[in-house]
Image (cartoon, rainbow, N blue to C red; front, side, top):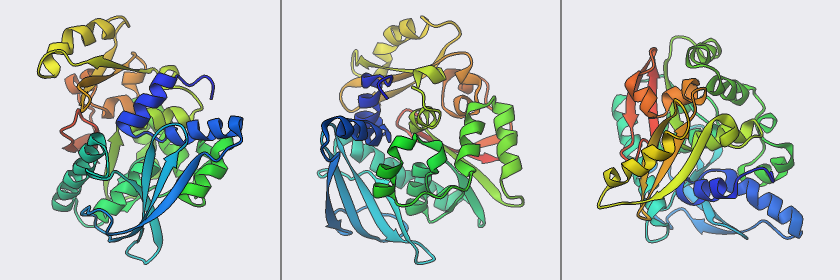
Length: 313
């Protein structure tokens, strides 16, 4: 864990909401022999979010070093107790939380209008949990797999997210995302059920998720992140500075998000990373120039392509 770049961790935690917060807090707790978080319970009506399933209660986790997050508990269509991390709107949440909350509301509307009956959604476990809560759609992966996260954090994940479901599906998705686009897509098709409408939901968070699954940093996976100050009134004024950084690496591509903090979050992908299935599904400049065959874009969020949904054709 010491190899993880602190700037990457904090950027993902505070600006994207990556799950690396849990990992970082665990290791801090191990060193200091103190609890990694405190938790308080709130009723489901504590803040209003238009989810598909009514929320029964929230667990609010506050970490000793950095940040906090909210876990929503609800009953699904089978009356099974389920959960998902959720972003609270203002004034409870931050401005970034509020943006993400609205994006998920927008995504739910699109899915409700365009996903046919008997659809199945494929995405990382925490993203899938949130997608199920907001849309009511069936997801292929509903929980983490302890074989695809560092063993040292298993007990903490279990305490927060419940017991893992070791079905092997998350390992397949991780391998597919890290393979070349054509190989990865074929890998998913072989593993997924036939005669169903299949959708892949991919997020900028998947960069950190995939790195964590392989026990590496995003940099070691071919992705780099940097935060640039906003120059001028919009993102375009900062493009020359961003491009100078991008061009430091040969054949690199990138995508950007303008942050509420008057800054720009830039992701850069090297030649290998941009040709992986994950790289081709993210809105990198290389992917926009050469859209991936075999998938059709259903939804892309307005906030820097934070989240995309593709139909597998």
